[in-house]
Image (cartoon, rainbow, N blue to C red; front, side, top):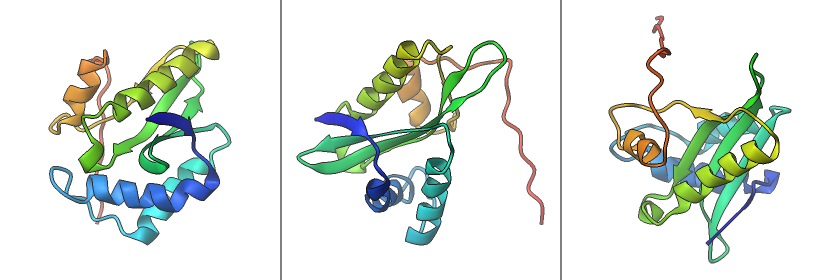
Length: 146
C-alpha cells in the first residue's frame, strides 16, 4: 500500500475507479467513460491542482482530486473528489489519502483541509471518524433549472 502523486496518464484508470465507486448504491450515479474523464480532467486543468492515487500491487485502487483554494484568512486544500474501489474500501486507503492532504497542508503552512460530502451517505461517517466536523455555519444550496 502506498500513496503517490497523480500523473496525467493515470486519468483513464481513475475514471474506471470513479465509476466503480459511484455508479452502484448507495450513490447510484451514472458516470460514463466520457463524462467521468471530462469531470476529472477539469480538476487536473486547475493550476492549483493537487492529486494523489492509492496503489496496491501496482494497481490504482483510489484517488484524491483536490486543489489549493485561496481564502482570506489562509489558503487551504479543498478536496474535490476522493474515491476508493468498492472492494478496497475499509482497508485504510481513504485514510491514507486524507492523511496526505493534511500533511501537505502542514508542509505548505496552509489553514487546513475542507470538503463537501452527502450527509445521507456513509462517507459522512468516514470523514467524522477521521476528525472532520460539520460546519454548522455553512450550507450547500442549489436550484435545478429546466
